[in-house]
Amino acid sequence: MNGFVCLDPRFSTTRRLTRSKPSDAGNALGSCLALPAAAGRKGEGGLRVNGYFKQAEAGGNVGGAPCGKPLITIITAVFNGEKTLEKSILSVLSQSYDNIEYIVVDGGSRDGTIDILKQYEHAIDYWVSQPDAGIYDAWNRGVRLATGDWIAFLGADDAYADNAIAGYVDFIAAHQPGTLEYVSSKVNLIRDAQLLRVVGHAWQWPVFRRYMGVAHVGSMHRRALFEKYGLFDDSYKICGDYELLLRPRDTLGAAFFDAVTVNMEVGGVSDANVRVFDEAARAKILSGKRGALVSHLEKHWAKLKWRMRKYLFK
Image 1 (cartoon, rainbow, N blue to C red):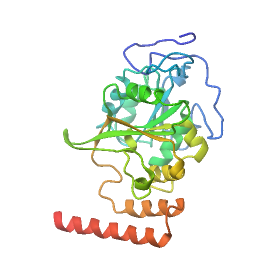
Image 2 (cartoon, rainbow, N blue to C red; image 1 turned 45 degrees about the vertical axis):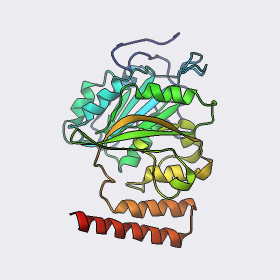
Image 3 (cartoon, rainbow, N blue to C red; image 1 turned 90 degrees about the vertical axis):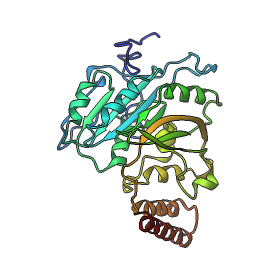
Image 4 (cartoon, rainbow, N blue to C red; image 1 turned 135 degrees about the vertical axis):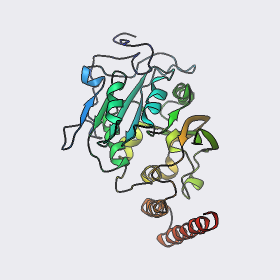
């Protein structure tokens, strides 16, 4: 552990820090260690502001494979999330894996969100609060701020299961180095503290080309995936994650971690929103997965089924 310091052994994010700044800031993704000040900024803070950073550890042994200790970046985008954000933060800080970088991008909240971020900024690597153009714009900012080998996105009202990140790292380590670009898992759908169902299955191109069957909140993305295919298209408001994963088509190096990694609250931007069908169809057309006419018909059939469901079960 040469060069690493532990500020607080209680938290996953404060057990392994360094004073050495990452060397890859300024790469093709436009990486940065802090966002430039913008109009409407309400604040920033975290370990980076105090000169502490993260890096992968060379050597080591993870899951029986000599692949070092990869740095995992978790990004949370939030706006007016005072009711649920603390739960999400604590689920990250309580992870057993000790090389986690946590970044929170706030869209300029008007409730108590910023107070919560300040309360935990001793264990958050970097947080910033300023207006953004929606969730994919916020995620793109998070990716630019990330220095991890793998990147995950946790909703502000979702929570990781115990030891989820350690399980992911062991799973990835069991594969040939460099072969994986994307790993998905299972997710518990929760409403009012009650389990509704478990979702998420293995990524398979013939299925994925038809619909988003993987659970994105329970996924890990190798940093190289963004370097190769670019950031999220923030013209999408609901299906930007689907569109990103359509770009590699059947060449995506994907694997399925058969475990529940996240408890996800039902709701959010795509829940009960017909716009999801329009955006998914546009993503398919632009990816070249099928002809525009077929996608157009599929989109409107999906709309019709949704409207019938609303009528029958209202």
